[in-house]
Length: 174
Image (tube, rainbow, N blue to C red):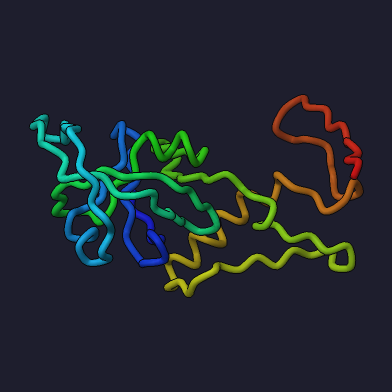
């Protein structure tokens, strides 16, 4: 699965691969964005089972997909078909999940993604960047699948139709 994001505020296409144990960035991207190359002795086994020496390792980079921001170092290798491949190390650090059966990518929802205002009962969530028609349709579909997870107030809670669950409201203290 591929998603658009930024790396140190530069636009890239990320390939999400939960089968890869580590994340790698294409050497061409490192050169284009002038990232520092630190020496490393690490070897990488790629999809065709060949083992290659990593060219190096980056300094800590800012990896941003939507509102999810993770800081980590990435190995540098020659990649022809991807800018950056995010592997299991990134999934574990970000808390993101990839569900192939549902063809779905989920990222942790952070507080700033859901700005609540007591005076406005309706949430208005829009994408941070412009999307083409298909991307916008998928964005709205993803939001629709999340709407059952949150309630603006206790009055919005209804009987669970998915099973026998009891919803117990909690009171947060400041």
